[in-house]
Image (cartoon, rainbow, N blue to C red):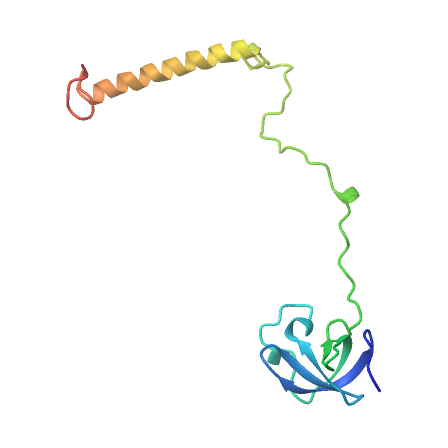
Length: 155
């Protein structure tokens, strides 16, 4: 009796290799289960899953013109219930995390209220100029007045 693609048949493991297992089917034919078709999880060593002489159920994946039969153990087993599928409608909308200061402007001092771009730039420039002056002053006091880090005169 010739097996057909999609048939689920029983067989006995006759040999193990590092790339798969040879199985003698009840029909008398011999096929091979590739290591990737042994289990749904990653199989590092086939001997952890199969042993010679073990009876197994396999699904016929392909029958070659030369008589080679490709088999699968994992496809012959009943489907495992899948985890709940994630649907786009199940997603919660993204919300920015609250950083401690909610954007509520009522009751805040005038300087915290939204300002025009020009006002914000003027304030930034003022703060930047003050920081630059502080850096210059601290640099002069550390390096002896008119000298730079290399010890030569600034001018």
